[in-house]
Amino acid sequence: MPMPPSATGALPPLRSIQCFEQTARFGNVARAAEVLDLTPSAVSHQLAKLEALLGRQLFIREARGVRLTPVGEQYLKEVSGLLHSLAIATERAASDAGLDCLRLHSSPSFGLLWIMPRLESFRLSHPGIQINLSCSYESLHFSRDKIDVDIRHGTPNWPSYEVRTVRDEAFTVLASPALLAKRPVVAAQSLLDCDLILSEATLLKWPQWFAQHGLARPEKPYALSFDRSYMTLEAASHGLGFALESSILAHKYLASGVLVEVAPQALRVPVAAHHLVFPKAHSSFPRVRRFLEWMEAEMGHPFAF
Image (cartoon, rainbow, N blue to C red; front, side):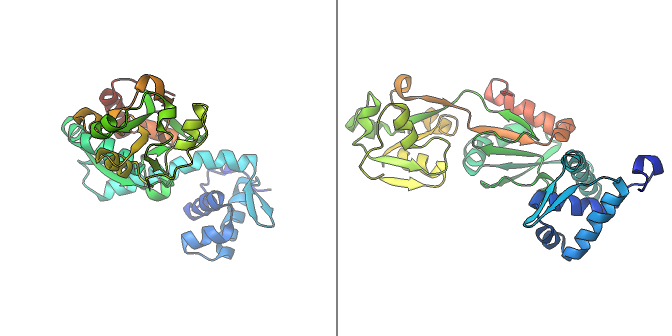
């Protein structure tokens, strides 16, 4: 059996590590080969070379692909952060050394409604940090997509990452003042025959909300439905129906008075829907620490862990 790298001083080839990470990510050699622009046999050769160098088995080969051994799982946790750090260092060396780039990915509505209105505040307080913001509902791959922090919407289930949850968020019933004047609502039952706007991508939707209030889903069809919260809020601001949306995302609508909360004491439901997710190694990046501190200051309270 070959001596381990620690004994020989040898480092595994970067190509072998890349093949290992991509194969672990997809659980499939052919898919990893496609991403890396290699043949499946070349990827298999690199994996065999890495296992021979380590003297340990990293994958269990199965009929439909591969899965990590416990050793492979631990190795993946440690090398993924190193690969990402190498990519960041390479990018920094090739760019303007005086400007640090914070790469954010966000769920679309949080990016548009919460981050965008506050970008000027961040730029004024951190002029040496450039922000690159992308938005989608995908959970991107931190190393491949060069993401520092991913702001995700949903139920937190990312045990291998650091997670900071936005506190004091609630789903609340919202309406334009004109609509509420025409259709007063004092209890959940009052909404059963109202025009409702459905947000299709939210953590809490109308059917679950009615169930929490002991009511069956309304038989009346939804007036409108949207796959983005910002579209639901905009439609509600025009009086097109009642919306069930995040109090955080609706902040500017509430502050301007174009939307109002409907019976908040009775109809509000606390949630933990938005989370800042990042590899543990990223917490040592000054730009990430400054962004987290800035967000806490903007929210007026610390994150939940």
